Each structure stands twice: as structure tokens, then as C-alpha cells.
Length: 320
Image (cartoon, rainbow, N blue to C red; front, side):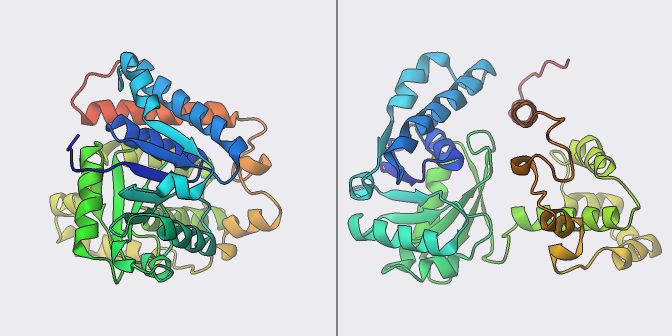
């Protein structure tokens, strides 16, 4: 860890906040984890501990480092105490722009004048968030993808008034904590959520037309398309296949037939929502989560991500 990288504060003691705090602590950073409600702090530390133990069991952390890593995370319910003297402050509260703007503005009142303020929003505008700050030049989004302690990629999104120094600082911090920062434009969804919504829109449209099932779409994505993604991106595939093919009749027919729905409510996503089916939280969505165990699903998801992380790191993976 570089000596010039300062201590950090994570605002929000939910799942994402705990995972970001753990990720920073794993990188050697001292972290203040703030929660508005004091009673939320003990469960947050338990989530950090569970996250570390999962990494250790899977060979991605040394169990002998447990006390040192978790010891770098201190909890606070007093915002001023949490952010004072911290050089990097990132909020990880609900995707509510007014809440984020208010919290960051409050943090700015108590933090160092040169502190970098950040948000892990997945889609809200950096320009809109930083407009609530006295020093908008010191704000830069760092969008960690869930689970933040497993996924290496972090989107770095500057706003209109973000200084280059803030971008460089954020990028350096992420690299020093073993993340892969990618500079993204301040557009709806940045890059990660944007492609995620594009895929969902196309599949939801096909499901709505009765042409395919959600199960078939997810199988195509997981067992087919996603299997080669670590080795080949969209533009690499286009060059490999040949841009002559990508401009041919078959490609033109596909592009012309792709969904262009502009409102999720016009697809099964909106229909299910209108009926009160919100997904795992309600027990049903595209799947019946009373018959599938959500916790088991998330456990297997994390194990699969671990497999991918090991493969990308050049390690050997035991196949069942």
C-alpha cells in the first residue's frame, strides 16, 4: 500500500457499504464505516467478517490476516467523527439522488477541504450529485459492482466539474486496493448498468412476445455467451468475425429486429411489478423464489465469481 494514500470513510452500513469497507481494508486502508442507526453497525461488521471468511475459505485471503484486516474497519454513527481527517469518502446508501446529495453535502461540512468525495451509484448522474457540493471538483463516482469484495472492476465516472486530480486520485486508490478502474462517461447507466439493461430489455421483449422463457434466456447467457466473455469482448469478437460479416444481411436483419422499447413498463418487467411481484424480496418475479432458496442462489453466485477471479489470476480451479 502506498504511504500517500489516506484513510477512508464509507457512508452506509448496508450490504454494499460493508463490502466496500472490506475491499478497502483488504488493500491495507484504514476505514471508518458510518451508519445512521447505531444498531446497524454490528450487523455490518458481521457482514465484513463473513465476507473475509468466504474469501479465506476460497483461497483469496490468508486467514491469518483476519484480525488485522477487520481491525482496520472502525464503526461510527456520528458523521463528523466518521469523516474528519479522511482523504476519501464514499457513500453507499440507497439509490435516491436527494439522499445522496444531502449526505455528501453534510459530509463535506466536516471533512478536509481537499478530501475526495465519491458515490457508488450505478446510474445516477455525477453532474447532478456534485451540484450539491461546495467543491464539486473534488467529487468522482466510484461504482463498485456487487459483491464489491469479489468483483474487481470499478467504474470511475467524473462529473462536468470534476478535476483531473480527483479522477487520478480515485483511480490510484482503486488500483492500490487491487481493483480494476475503468473510466466511464456520465451517461445514464454508465457502461455496466447500460449493457445490463440492454440485455434485459431484449430478453424481456422476447419473453413478452411468448417466443422464449426466462430460463432459456438465462441459460443462453450463463452457459453460452458469458462463458467466452472473459476471453473476448464485443469489439474483439466483431474484429474476429470480420466487420464485413457485421455489415452483412444477417447482421442487418438482427439489428433491425432488436427491441427498442423505451419504458420497462411495456415489457414483462413492468407487468410483474404492477402485480406486486418484485423479485426475491416479494418471493416471486420471473422466478418463484419460494421454491428456490435466495441465499443458496447468492452463495453459488459468489462461488462462481470466485472461480472466475481465480481463472483470471492464472490460478488452477478444481472442477466438480
